[in-house]
Image (tube, rainbow, N blue to C red):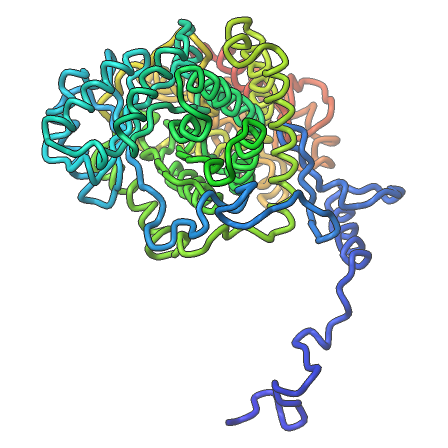
Length: 621
């Protein structure tokens, strides 16, 4: 074989040969020098800064966990154990999901039995393995359950019920269907979905867990493969809660159910086997991986002190891609968000994963969006082979430390809830709602300033996008904790812009007063256009021109934004601002100049700027 490296090069098999031999050794000090150099060039590191330069790259989660730019093996994480063994961080089953994949669970919310049945059969034929079925007043009537499940082999494709306060009637309907089809009790599978605590959080109407526990005791005695109880973290996630708050509350709900189930006559292992945990999966890949790993560690500890043997302490997890992160505007980006979330949930060891369709925030999914949601699971399982590796994130210094820190933060939240009397008392007093609201306020501020950017909404909006029309979803219950979507405030501004367009034949506008040649103003003009269009305000860019007042008059705009270099602002800002005759003049950048009413810059409160400009321009929804 020809030696491509030349005649003097040593063969690859020579002892001691390293591909990095010609490079200097990599060490932390050298890395810090390189970091400092980049930060100084960007202006983020003062010349006289004497601290660790990487400290400028540290970010913090809503739980106060510091995310470092580099992780090494210096720290010692908590004991990890092995897959299928306590503390179950690495998975609840020793084999993971090798050979089976995780349970691909689809969400069904249609209220007409025939339409629901058509969608369910399409999902199952397209690769889904179980169905999460909404029942009750705002969804499918319980009396039509059998019709909706016509031709569905419920002994092979588990059905997970979601009937809110009507959980007992829904459970009886499903058990009756098993009997009608002569399915042996030993072969009946599924989850009856009783979640009085989650329903209390959703509706504000107190439902005690006792009746649900009594139902579970009856079911456990006859149907060994059925679960009755769900401990749902979505109400707390959608109310704005952080990852540790979601984990802490769902573990607290699990403990409340554990108490009720044992009071109903079940022993601890049997009681634990009746509970399924539902958690959100977000587009924050590593936090989501850590969340599912940490949740198993927390539940293992609860069951350990409750006296359960190791074999009974695994947590059964249902992951749902976050409804809060979905957008109505540019909904196609939701495919990217849900793909990352599905990947993270699978890598984190979730037993079942529901990928919400990309149009779920708009209305009922159509056949295309439902197929894409199913295929997201299929691609990750069948093509990427994600399910073929047990705990794929295990051994990563970053993931292990993040899992450890998140578990500690969630345990503090859980113990605080227990000290206050438990999850039911915290919901009744409003203390939990207040903490969730406090976290939401922090998140809302970061969303408003675009520190948490929303692609297609607060960043890179497309005012010319075609609307996606869908049949409206059934109305959601209200009265309890609020349900937030991260994009909601920006989307209200876009809705107002659409209404203005319908009434006036054009959108509200802002004129970009570009100073100097294209090379001098293009960066800030692009930034300003991006920001104003996030509020549905069309940015008119005249390019390089010598007559800005005339271009402003021709634009039909009433507001303007100066865009140029700092040097150009010093020389021209006041003069140009006065010459335009605009009702309101902004400046892209920072600084105080005569005639300039406000500034827009990276980190400014974009939502406040846009809301104020809407008011000035007479834009209302």
